[in-house]
Amino acid sequence: MNKGKISVEYIKKQRDLYDKVAETYDEGDFFWHYARKRKLAFLMTGLKREFSDLKGKLIIDIGCGTGEYMVPFVRDNTTVCGIDFSINMLRTVRRNARVCTSSQ
Image (cartoon, rainbow, N blue to C red; front, side, top):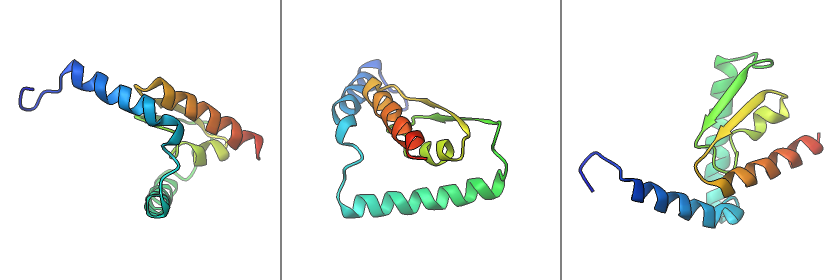
């Protein structure tokens, strides 16, 4: 690999890895969940402070993974578009969004 450049093969390997782990990606151990929840809470506090009224706006989450950062916005009825190179991660996002909206 050339220094500073990412090859197409590397990207494909990463995509394949995320496709394999998509179903269980959110099932990490206690520390994993604790750290992610703290990071998410910090992020959401900052975003809501900076952008107090997001209703009617479009948020684009690039590299959305399983959608953990998207779900709080979906709960607030904000329009969110997730982009990811792993089709299985996107399938998980769709499932998480359906669960999120049906439980409101």
